[in-house]
Length: 264
Ligand SMILES: [Zn+2]
Image 1: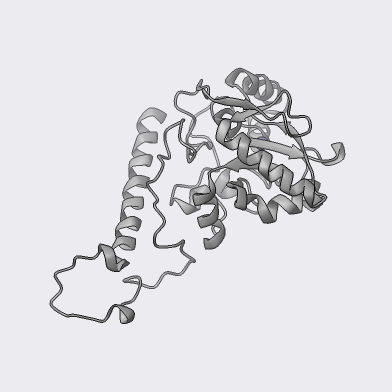
Image 2: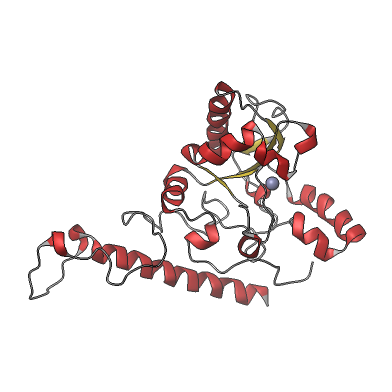
């Protein structure tokens, strides 16, 4: 069923995105060759045909700049509804995070690794340096992580904290968990630490988002993880920062992903 359901969802998302882009294009003077008989000074034209109840990103943002369903895309959506395709996907440009403490045996895709190194250097300069917990995880690594937890604590409990293999953002090569002290490694107290506060405030400047924000478990499927950064590039991280929309699902108008659509 998932193979039928998944593309249909993406088609709906694409249609929705097209509608958003169309509205934005209509509002742009440069892109409105409307044959309207009434000439109205552009300064008086409402930027949108209907009032929007929520903050919207800049009208010039290109929602279609990168695909959301391609494992090679820096915007790829990986959550409990949308696994990587194929689930066994392996990035081809993994780069060691050698310039970051405890990163010598950890990898991200080249573009993300470069951006994370810059973020680290900025954080360190502010006394908020951090270490790498884990970055890229292969399908088999995630399976070795998930299966024992599901066996010992049950699928429902495991699913709240650990992604199933093929459904982990870490497998995309674009996600990383960072920490400073062991006591707050993979713990929410990281959010109160100097590096936790630094990345919450500045990660977007380097193309990262805090992928699992506070109080968004019903959208992302995960509790608040102030340590989990996802690289999306500065175009998207800036647009999300400016709009105040904190999740990829909400920004792109995708369905919430609180649970898996299939059993493991
Ligand atoms: Zn993580």
